Image (cartoon, rainbow, N blue to C red; front, side):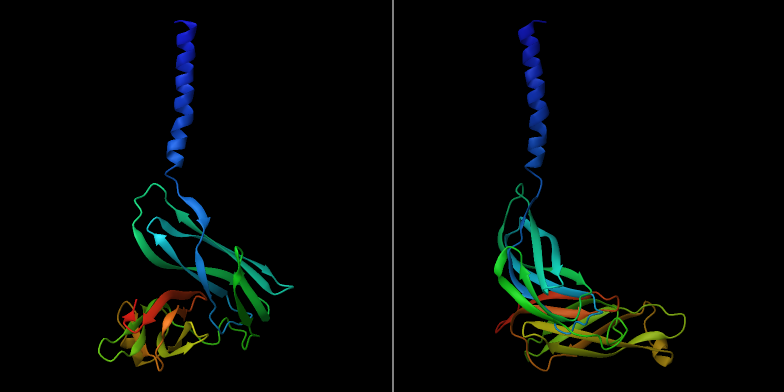
Length: 253
């Protein structure tokens, strides 16, 4: 085999070796800044709550998915800087579609006080958040039900709005959990805060529960919600269920 032929084969092998990974990398998702437009901050957090803020935006097409979200807390200056990313898939066929999304950012426990929450890449996008002093040593003011799903419903005829909750109560060796009340309030104006208040009992109510301990509950709203907002439902495990809602004169979108 001549020297020229050997050199050609070596060059071809090297070219193939370095070209293959490039083709794979072009199909990998690219992490980009998430197009955040609003910050939702539910009211009612205390200094012993697992505090959350929720980010909202719109993807321009179907090639985007929700990425990572994080926060840096400056306790001395009471400032919270939030970062959020999205994954863009360059190898997919992108359908033009405005797709709303939310990203929940868990802040953990914070000291009592007023905080400024802002996006790292958007200095003009910020909200104020109040963390109150705890009223009880328990994790929450109430015992919350184990809600697994939540949504806003609008009656087609009357236009009345209601929050529908569903889930499964936990198993107890003695007694059972029942849902006693659901408090719904708009706090602030773009957030519906839902508190599903539960109680542990040991009576005939336990016998009337389904074998799988499933439940559904519908709570009517005294005042109609309008515009873009967040449905924020507290749950037993200290987390919450967050749903983006958009209501105009034509109904829920």
